[in-house]
Length: 291
Image (cartoon, rainbow, N blue to C red; front, side, top):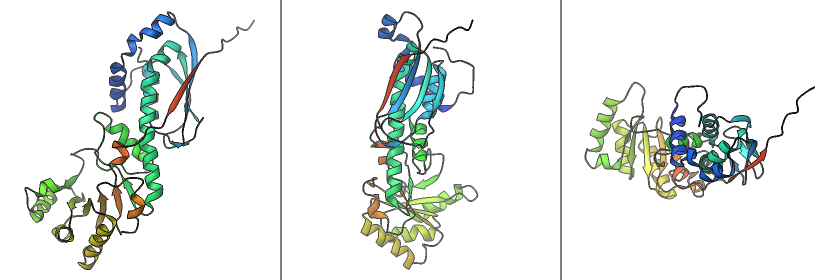
């Protein structure tokens, strides 16, 4: 399978290369048996449900690697409905057939994440919707991008991207000391976030210098009580409050009025339902020679 003109090897290119190798696209026995020679064809990929589109970067990378021409394409973040044509490809039918499943898999999963995110954003009201690191191994960049396409914020990409003191850190280092050490390691203007589960620890973390307080596994009433405790202690102003733990697009509405700034939802990536897509193929019309 040709890679066409050389270009910079991006993370999405490496992901696509791995996925195509996994499906052994160069060993498509059925297509080889039925089509011994090239057949010019046109393929259209259309949505089969409503949602928010994502995964087009991967789809384009697959087309490039397969030597196919993209004739038209919708943009990531577009709203789609049943019948929406999101991509049209032209080229050898054998190559289209070989990469079909991989291309659709990327679109289905990424669009599912984007759709779940858009749903959470619509229901969350004043709460900003953030993703988490609860991603499928190997698909983190695809899923983080999809969260953005759905109107959410990807949050930190990996462990090197931010300072977040979690409960298991605090099992080993006392809270004030943990905040002090994190602050010493932070870059200029870089926020330090601390996970807390009680009003006492929330206030202690704020007074120790935490910029963001992560209220983990709190029901709406408990989260509201924690935020009010910060206000009473005079440490709410100038700090961000994040909610996390068990919140889904279906339940985020219950947290709209607790006084937090944002909610991080692992469900956006680990539990998003796929958006179905379908590829239809037809022979390309032959051009008539003039004269």
